[in-house]
Image (cartoon, rainbow, N blue to C red; front, side):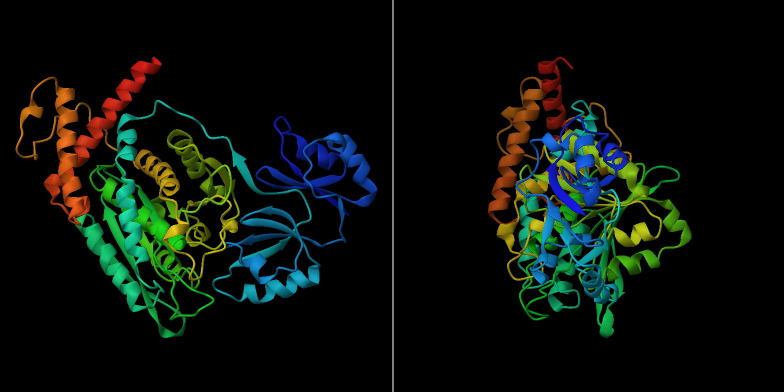
Amino acid sequence: MKVELHQARSGDATLTERVEKAGGWLVEAGRKRLLVAANARWRAVREATSLHDADDADDAMVQDLGQGRLHGVCQKGRLFQQAHPEVPVLLDAGRYLVVDLPRSEANRINKPLEQSEAPCFRLFPLRESTRLFRQVAPRRDAAGARAVDAVVASASQARYVTLLSQLVSYPTRLSSSAEYAQAVDWAESQLTTAGLAVDRQQVSLPGGASSINLLARLPGQAASPRHWLVVAHLDSVNHQGGPSAPAPGADDNASGSAALMLMAEVLAGQRFDDDLSFVLFGGEEQGLHGSRQFVAGLSAAERGRITGVLNMDMIGSINATPAAVLLEGAPLSQDMIDGLSAAGGRFTDLELQVSLNPFASDHVPFIDAGIPAVLTIEGADGANDAIHGPNDVLATVDPSYAMKIVAMNLGFVATSAGLHAVDAPPLPECHCRGDERHHLGDPWRQLEAHHEALLAQYRRWQGQGVWLAQLDVGWRQAWQRLELLRSRREWERRSRSTGR
C-alpha cells in the first residue's frame, strides 16, 4: 500500500469519488488529504485523478506501508505524540493525526484507554475514505439582526480578562480541591450579582471524593420555552505533577469558563423566548463526571426540552495560521453547526472547521443521550502542548482571539434562543453627575456624550477595583441600554455608507 500527502485545491469536490472509482481512497483533515492505494493500483489512481502532475504535494514523498498499518488518532493537545514520539506521523492536523502503526501495536496502546474514564487520545483503524474534519466556508451576513449585533458588541474584552485572571489566580482547580471550591464560590457570587438564579449539584468522583457543578438560569418568555445550555468545565489538572502540583489551567479551561461567565453576564440583561442555562462542570478532567451525572439526572421531559448544548473547552490559544475554530459535534448536531457557522461568518474572521467525531469533552454525554451538542474549541488544539501541566498559564491565552469565539457563540445563542428586539428604546435615565451640558443638542449627540460620561465614571471605578458586574442593577441596565443604542447607531452609519 502506498500513501502520499496533498493539500486540497479548489474545484476538486468530486475528488473522493474519482479516487475511489480508480481503486484508491482518501483520508481528509481540513485542507490536508492523504491519498491511499494498493501498490498495483497506485499509478492508475494518480493518473485517473490528475494527481500525478499536481503541484500541491507536500514535501513528504510517496511512502510504502504494510496492510492494516494506517491509523487515525484523536488527541488532547499533543498528548499522543508526547506519550509515543516513536510513532511516525503521516498527516498532522493538530487534534487529528494519521499514523503508521502495526495493528497489534495499536491494539496494545488502545487496550488501557478503553478502561479509562478520561482517555487523552484514542486510535482507530483507517480502511476506507474518511473525513476527520472538514473546512467550512463561513457565510458572511453583514446585515443581520440589529439587536443581536448590539448584544455581541456589548461583550467586553476587559471584563473577560478580569474573569480569566481570577480563575487562573487559584493555584489549582483540581475537581476535589479546596481551591476548586473557592473558584465555585467566586463564580457563584459573580453570576448572582449579574442577576441569574444559581444552583449547585454535587458530583461523585472515583475513590469517594466529590466535586460541584454550578448552574445559572435565565427563564424564557415564551409560553412553552425550549431550553438551551451553555457549558464549560471549571476544573484543571496537572497530570505530570499530581494532585498537589500547580495546575493554573489558563487555556484548559479558564478560557472557556471565563467566556461562559461573560456570556451569562451579557445575556442576563436581555429577554428571550427560550430558557437559557449556564453550567460550570466539575470532574471533567477525571472522566466527564460532572456532565455525565448532570445528564443522568435529567428527566425525560427535561431532556426533550433541550434544543442544543454549546460547550466551550480551550478557546484561548492560537495554534495555526490562519486562526481557526473547530466546531465538533455529531450528525444530530448539524443544525447547531450550521447556525454557529453563520454566526462565525457574521461576527469573526476565523477559519471554521467542522468534525462529526465527538471526543473527550463535556458535549459527549449529551450527544450520547441523543441531545444535540457542539464543542467550540481552538483550531489545531493538538498543537497546544502546555495543557494538563504547570505551563498552562495566563500568557498562553490570547484574549482578542478568545473574544472572537465568544462573539460567534454569543451571536448564535442570542439568535437561536429568540432574543427580544427593542425598537427605538428611549434614552436611559441619566446616572452621570456634575456637568449636564451633554443633554443639549440632537438625541444622538446626547447619546454619545452620555456614553462618554458613563464610560469615564466606569473607568474611575475600575481604577478602584470595581467592575460593571459588581454595580447595582440600575447602573448595569443603564450601561447595557447605552451599548445597545450605540451599536445601533454604528450599524445605521455603516448601512448608509454601504448603501444597505
